[in-house]
Length: 264
Image: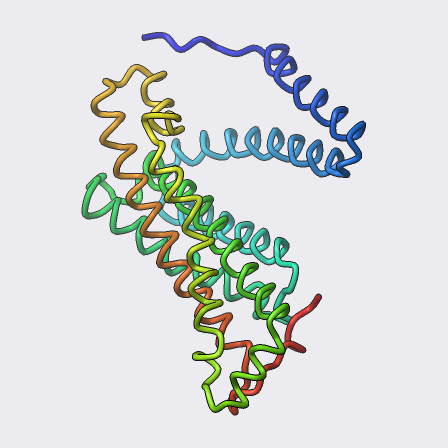
């Protein structure tokens, strides 16, 4: 099966739709036209660059290069998590918690999937490792960012209630237990919704790509099921780590609420 090649002018037609959307947001006074256009330009440049990098990476087939690209992806994901917080932890914690959580969850789940399930030879084969890690990091980044932002915003808004519970003798963890649960639920909702409608409302990207490349639909479906299960695990474990570490940073060693540790 031959893939229909897209010409630059055809991509420009799709870009014109985004420009039209930006114009509509300007007329509606939404204030998102500039970030929308910047995001679109970044997406084009970043994907064009990664296309060139992946071509060289596949030719080299070197585990050190694969590891370096993976760490670069992680570094950018950590920066995005930190930038999306309304109430961000000061210092290295603002960047380190999200990045560390994604490193532990996404890398561990990716390695497990590649080595124990896909069983690529070698397991770090860039044809498998980079796409799988990219999908896990992208989704885990969103889940971690949403859950941390929900927790810190809720803690700031409920600071008087938390203080009252502390005065009644509760520990810091007990005082924010409901906020932690709500933060975890908010982070998991997008993953749950995406899995619930996969194959009925939407055809996920990996499955669509494999079908367009000429692979049998049954094989594409199995790979997509695997990816979604890995994504759910990566998002869940990443959020558990990030939210727990963030919740602990809300208090000092004497269980006093320390919202001064956050930028707002």
